[in-house]
Length: 165
Image 1 (tube, rainbow, N blue to C red):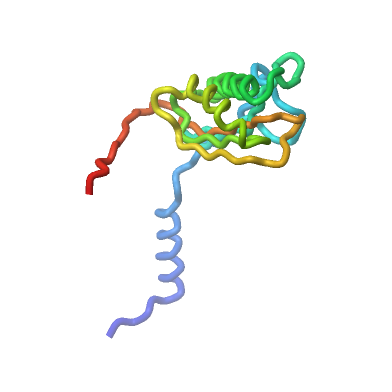
Image 2: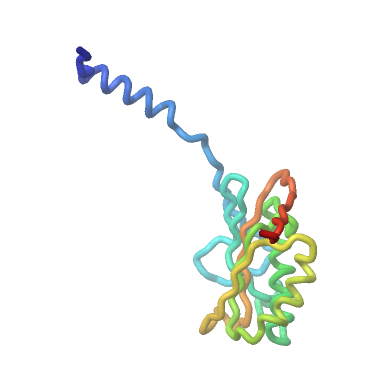
């Protein structure tokens, strides 16, 4: 008949189990760059966790003045995507490595004009994307774009499923 382990045996086996189940360390790096405009608010422009870059929402602001570009959603989207490219570079990534974007619009009718600018930047392999209409955005912006990207050596592949059933 098997005897239950003594308290000392249980503690020893449990501590061995815990030490062998420790996860590897992951680097968390905060990214803020003067090359990309940032509204004065309590957040970082981006955070890199491991090989994933999380970019805060970016608006279509001019760097020197921190004012929105003129012209509405189209020009704002174009400038926000330009600012996103600068931020991603500072974080060790690029637009080619973006895996997910979230676009916030104050008017869903601007969806088409924003897509025109979006296609200029993401023309080959589109990232996953969500787009929401919201009541308002900071500074009276029409568009805000956030992104998640990969850093490091990224191998790009794609899968196209056959829709025949």
